Length: 345
Image 1 (cartoon, rainbow, N blue to C red):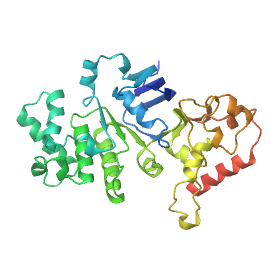
Image 2: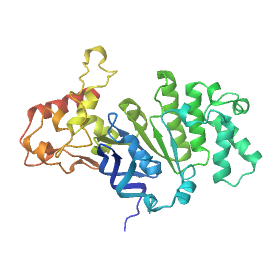
Image 3: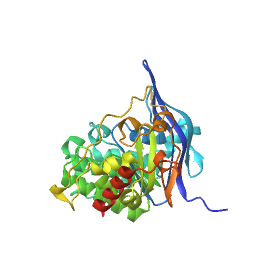
Image 4: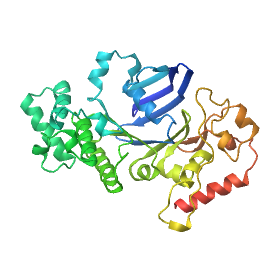
């Protein structure tokens, strides 16, 4: 029997928010996996379900959110069956998370060093002195200058980039096996964004930590991730190795995302083409493919039946009726696909 290399497996996950207007079906049956030491990118527009997926994994959903169905297996054990006490031992120790906004994630009235120490004291058998020394060491590791003095500072005394570095130091302080980074470069300027992404990439390589990077920035994904899951309307539309998804996209939504980002190689000659329309209302999600109202290749079956996954290549699959062997040949689809491939290359 083949050894299971997956450190995390999400199976048929359904997560909803039960509001006074009705059930908002934020996640509608996704399957995601990540191998040990791998960096997985989860991409998609705002509202596609990326952050809800991460909060479901961490069991940090607030009312009225709730996981309705599915399994979240971490090293073979279902996190959804863990008690809150058991999850407290796992969070920050085995699985750590970097949140979008470090200013709201850090406690404004506690010194930065102390906040890192708290995680160490809770999960590691360290004395207070050892935890303080380790906190300074972690700040040094993430590139905070004069770390010993900075450890005694409050979050408001740090710049945005330094606060995010402090969050990374806190997340990695207990050497987690899985790191979830949810939009780690949001609200940072371009130079600092590049530094943070390089830091996450280097730390993953040096520590062997598996990383899930949640972002809408395909450029970041191309630089750091080995595989990509493309999400839309609470579903995974396409999955594959980074090069396969970038150079051979199979789903019209993935193609739309790639056509709407700048390309350095083509510069001003390459016109950006936005995806028309807006994402669907998940209070009443579409019966068929959720992208069909915005898709220029939509067929009758797309509006009435949700497609299954079709293998495009090894480890590469997409949920699109155009990939069915009985689908009519679509020259425009093939032309768009070929055009994106040539531009990306």
